Image (cartoon, rainbow, N blue to C red; front, side, top):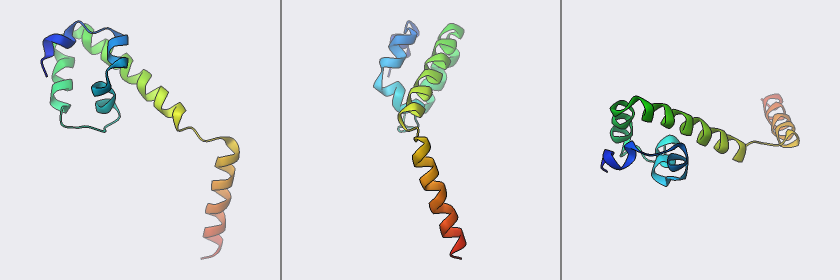
Length: 85
């Protein structure tokens, strides 16, 4: 990938880029050095990338957030399995 394309990326551009998502969520480390080098080419780009990373991680955590009842059920199972030992 060519860094020139990404230097002018906005927050929205990063959030909408599937390749960036894969890197943030550690689904694709093959371009790790590319994304890291991009952060250091231009300080403004690094700040935008960090905000986009935070946003993606927040969105992803909400996606996998368990309901209170699910947490309680899982906790009960854990406790029951400990008591069987």
